[in-house]
Length: 273
Image (cartoon, rainbow, N blue to C red):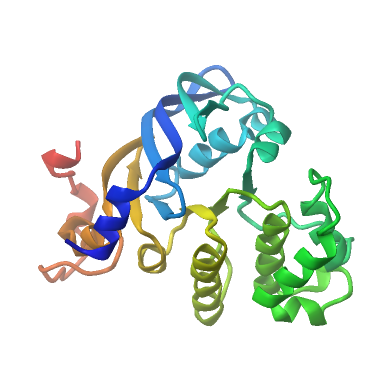
């Protein structure tokens, strides 16, 4: 048994999502019975094509559905044994979940330091300054960028967004597409830092990502979504060796594809249904 499998068996679920359905505008159903667990101290990744419902799952967990006229209409979400799907977003942050949004969503007309302090808004302690230094330890480039955050590069803005999440001292960080818009070199750097933060700080991570290669290398466990449902899950090593995952997410597979013609009529294997 691999180390990842042993770790998965011994870990306690920090987050449990139980058979949730999500509807937007009272008519558009996006999630259709999604269930997953995120064990404490692990990195779990959620993979799938665009429109599968990955970001909606994160928003359901972090309480952000209301901003888009969405709601959990069935099922429940528990964090540290407490039900949170009926809580407001600010209450969920205080329970220990912080989401790094797709597209980073930093405040461009504030400085990097001001953005970091904003992440600590819910805290009532005197350790803000030392935690800013902790962020600079992981992202030394930010220490050199003292001007407005809008002038940072895309990679630096992503670092700032993750640093802002760390300032909340969360128990779990939800990351939505951290590699979006970044060069391959910066993608490698950002994922290396994500793994290091998880190892050093013990912060649990739930990661939504299009780059399946990097996501599975960073993760302990993974789920694959299609059309609002979980269709496959397993530890990261198992998923990386799965022929379907190789073919449709990792750019591999045993059979050489000579054209994309057959892909148009692709039907999922029965065990994926």
